[in-house]
Image (cartoon, rainbow, N blue to C red; front, side, top):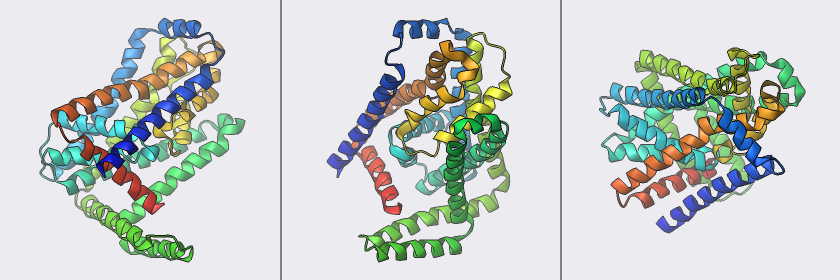
Length: 356
């Protein structure tokens, strides 16, 4: 099992790195690389570091959210430990399709530090619920503010992303608040699977119902901790606002002034809505391509590729490196647990496949 898990994790890493190499080869072939580097170097470092700091606040707020929910259960962890869990979860989400690996590994690390697995799961479910509500709400508002942009060929991609995320949120809320309805849906799906004579349908049903119990426990938590839940959702909104602000700092780094913060903010919201529902590791390739399509009029042809590199570097690649360092340090500190972590990732992917 451990050998299989190691192979699966290695495959995910290779896929992730392969997508990065392919993306940058396709985007930059035939370009003057030295000129591109000069453009990146010309950016004002003050705004670049400000963008990096804003993303640090983004992850810090998520860590605070996790710590706050755990505290409501009587769990005691430091904010630094919660930040460590957050960065580790981000790394494994980044390298696995549909971000299936992040939460299981976060829960694993929490339980290693004496946090109840059930409480850890609850903290991450609250965070995930808040994230879906925030991104969908802001996506709709910002999409309506960019109807001209969406009419230029991105509208159907935006609607697809909004539909995928909305469907995921609807299922999540149904699982949390309506156990009876959810079981009816599960039974209907299992009957359909049996009609097509797919294997292991009963085992799949057991796995789904086991996961359903965790969502039902969320309903109890939300009803008994309404104030904490609302605060958690509001903090996630602040998170997303910070995340969507990064392209504006890149914009200012190039000394540009013709577009407002709100205009660039809403464009980033549209971009994220389009790419967030796709099952690619870290949305690699799609995020870069859509950035070039959306922000062309903002940065102009000369600066556009450099702006994409900086924006995507700040919001994603830089923190992939940072989170990888955190993962390695913890793996060394915990010595022989790497195989166990790999197994958590493969279990998550297997469970995802079982549901699909």
